[in-house]
Amino acid sequence: ATPTSIMVGTGRAAELGVLFRNGEALQSLKSTSVVALDKTGTLTAGKPVMTDLDVASGFDRAKVLALVAAVEAQSEHPVAAAIVAAARDEGLALAETGSFEAVPGFGVSASVGTHRVDVGADRYMARLGISVQDFAETAIRMGYKAKTPLYAAVDGKLAAVIAVSDPIKPTTPQAIRALHDLGLKVAMITGDNRRTAEAIAAQLGIDEVVAEVLPDGKVDAIKRLRSGGRAVTFVGDGINDAPALAEADVGIAIGTGTDVAIESADVVLMSGDLLGVTNAIALSKATIANIR
Ligand code: ADP
Ligand code: MG
Image (tube, rainbow, N blue to C red; front, top):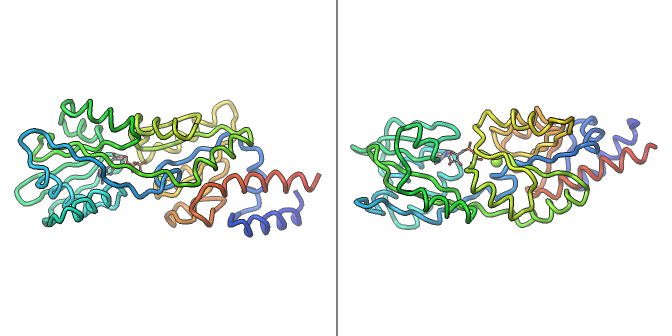
């Protein structure tokens, strides 16, 4: 493409709320064949709510919720905010915590009074040697409903299974349809539970799911999606999306996302929705067509 057509294309994109941070992206987007999307905060609102909390026998529901929320009050993960909000809604007071530890992609732990409290995914409990067997069926049902099951342990004993649900952004279904209409494959990359990820993918008609990815595993996921010579565009918003945004043939950041994601991306969508992805690809095709 000529410098002039790139300038015109970049200008038109900006009017549509799509910022190209470099001219190469405008040229290369047209040849993308897979659009891979982060789940939390990209396909979904990134504002989960707590929907369920089932306690194990012998545990008091309000006590467990208060302990878990006290720990989560120290965490910056979106699921933490959901649990803290639920505890506040129930009028529970959150105690002080000590020796807080966050294990990215797994969960969090802290001491609350005389208790040790651990909260996280099934793999976090596995790592701590705590069996989640008693809640296996409940967790499976939560996953099928597109909810994320989390587990809480108090003093090393499984105390509760918690479900959080993160609503799909209203524009996401239309955006996925538009990508399919352009003949593209759509993939999801997430650290979330496989069953939950697959339930959301099924609702949206997403073609490929890469779930239970550790925070530093998204780059490998992009490399795998690229096999067979497919050009991959990755769309994400989080701190842990930054390496994948840099690795992808084109990285697109959600403008409402973290600064690190925006700095690592080739394209930034000013609005929080995914319709901008289709606009960006369509503009790339039009810009290249113009110079023929
Ligand atoms: P994602 O943002 O896609 O869920 P993460 O790598 O941030 O991926 O987290 C993976 C999983 O680890 C989460 O889905 C959740 O089950 C668990 N997890 C991470 N942080 C916390 C936390 N503060 N409290 C409970 N669970 C957590
Ligand atoms: Mg995200």
